[in-house]
Image 1 (cartoon, rainbow over the protein chains, first blue to last red):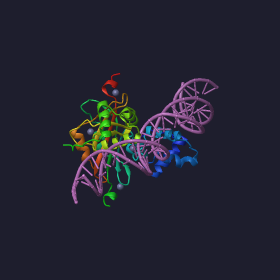
Image 2: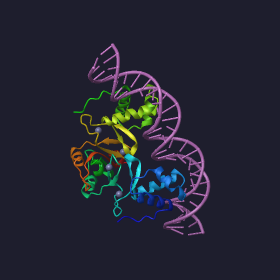
Image 3: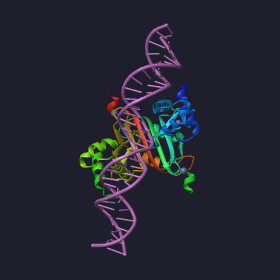
Image 4: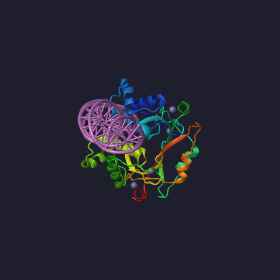
Length: 132
Length: 132
DNA sequence: TTATAAATGTTATATTATTACATAACGTTA
DNA sequence: TAACGTTATGTAATAATATAACATTTATAA
Ligand SMILES: [Zn+2]
Ligand SMILES: [Zn+2]
Ligand SMILES: [Zn+2]
Ligand SMILES: [Zn+2]
């Protein structure tokens, strides 16, 4: 079970927005959307994003500089993330595949370095875009 | 075998710099370093970087907004990249592991989407930093 | 209560990346 | 070689992303 985090006011406003959108949102798009709720400065957005990433409620899609709500809310996998990204329509979805996550969580390379975290981004064309 | 690409003047200057540094370099650090060679504007740097990424001579470390020379120069894996990143000293190295790359290149999830490309970033502490 | 940590508000600024437009060099083939 | 299309370059301006610094407020807990 994931620890319950009581989100603060700004964190809740921003999480709800991202969660409802269902797709990756960029920081300044978020800012624009929450200005009517009193969040006026980039830093307010980035601070909430940082916290939400830290507790695993959202993830950053690094290749897109965008943030998406975790689609595996019942489990704590913020340190083991994998995404599927369509290079045509930019649809993003979080991959939840236990074999993959086991394989990667246990991965060791020649260096003997043990990894505490990973992020994987797959790219391709989604079904819709492939059939066009 | 990788196709030989004849790098242009700017591409060569910038590739040589990144390659010699042996570590990830940021675009504006590159710019600063090549100004004495006549490359004066960000766009000149970004254009060369784009091309070098496209042909697989360098890779972008997405989580760091930095660029590193490909450490697998004899093979074409610019579309299947994996990196090991130390969160303390920021040392980055490219992982070359055929099992891993086969596993990921053949990965399919429930969506049936087939991926033409992936990027994987592992995080942890390197040996040096772990023993501190 | 009182101390401590966490979150907020605000302004300014740093960092990363692209648009737009003009010109030059390169590679191909007529 | 001449003409053509493609790739690369130069330059200025600006957009997009992210952080620093500082003051204040709110929540948590000893
Ligand atoms: Zn998740
Ligand atoms: Zn698509
Ligand atoms: Zn490589
Ligand atoms: Zn280290």
